Image 1 (cartoon, rainbow, N blue to C red):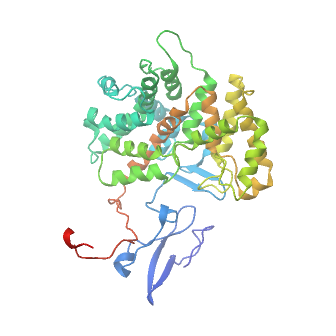
Image 2: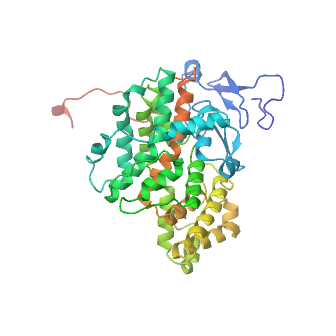
Image 3: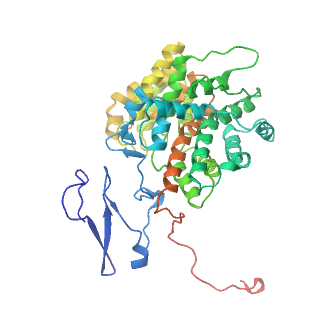
Length: 441
């Protein structure tokens, strides 16, 4: 195979790969990305060889081509449409990032104003959805409510479910992005037994969300701008992350022709899993289990002990084998929130800061590349902001919605798109004949 990941444009010879199966040599095309490793095209492998590839978890398989997000886990790089996540989190706002992910380029002033105005004026949900919420038990988990309510949007806004109509696809995209924080806040209010708070068109996306979460009719509420900026950064950092489990779920559901509301509901269901969207909640539970700073060495020793199954949550990452670039931004944001709220001296945060100090300086963590990840910092930050753990994954869903929609939109416009149909390595019983029940031994 000829390739050059560090210089994909080098050479005039098209890259190719050879595969020998049962003595027969098969030529496979190799696709060169803008950046990153070359990709061997095995789409014709079964037709030519009657063989499948086997890749549990799809860790070495590209299920699509995409222009949206790029990750280099070894170098700790995350790009949205080519822009480093650190630059966007520092200088941009979530609505601008939404526009970028959806449209491929940063907006002009007029384009941004038009887009921002559209999102602000789609935040209300149909009034009949209030009664829809009352169908859930009073103690229903907010993520369970989100799965149902987002999927139900297609029943209330069926005038934008024709996926073959480009105009309807745009309207549905705007509706989902704008209504997600409203539904998330409604799920929270229903969960805690408080009345719903309507959105306000004069507030920005993150400030509006915080107000809908925390305002009660009996008191005035003024949005803390430090917290609003922190929430905006959290949304930016979680907006997209390439072909993760929930995004792949959205694409797979969308490949069948399902409407975007149903696809996002499927993504929410996938995100709910503790190995995906629940990681920051697990990190917070770990800090609560440790309890006090004097117990930190005990848990660090357990994490280092190969005979102990205990693992520190919020350290290391499936993709990043370097410092998660989102974690650096989240670390800074966490400290800004702690300072604004004056909560640095709480036992939980003292434990977190001691763990952070050890992880960044201990040879074991450095050699194993077990750096604090975004989930470590986001969990303690959200807790400091007064957001309960039951809402952590809901916030993740609000942020990731734009990524899901951008990926869905890209897939719908891809001429190579076809219904997803993974194959399998069958290891069950071979063909056998049915035996009547009376004749079985």
